[in-house]
Length: 162
Image 1 (cartoon, rainbow, N blue to C red):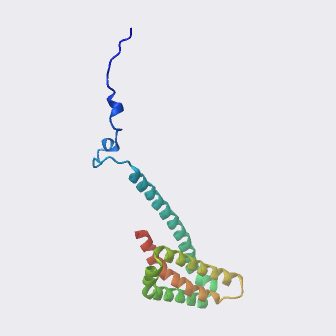
Image 2 (cartoon, one colour; image 1 turned 180 degrees about the vertical axis):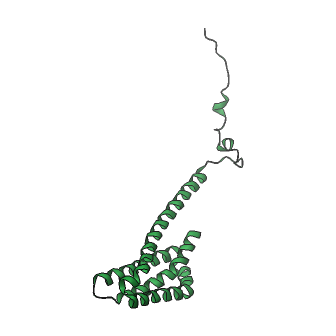
Image 3 (tube, rainbow, N blue to C red; image 1 turned 90 degrees about the vertical axis):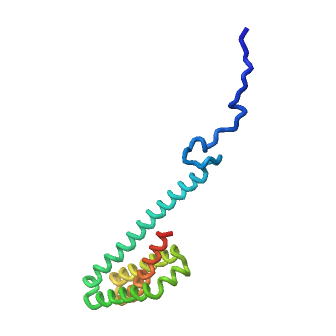
């Protein structure tokens, strides 16, 4: 006859092994790692958003910088220099007097999106000037681009720091 023993299965009666025993850095409380998982997912989302922001910002700013370099050579010295003066004058004034209030009122992300959109208006004004006989539209575009630039940098810095 087979020999039977009356051993008590201690594993069945003990509580399940908690994560505190597995993680030596844990504070000893029995808790799952859902908070750590959420933090890891949130860190991945922040990194992905940063990469998207960096790519969009770089592409947009690269287009604007290229137009600054082409202004005098493509539009002629008079209109090109006037355009650059308007761009940088509006940039300085909006950075000094408008950007702080706009970031405080709209928030960093909305200010950033609005500024990038206004930068696109500036780029589009050059397309209108190059392909139509309406050259002076770049002066209005430069004013819009200057306001955009003055608000873009504070909005971008505030968004990255959040």
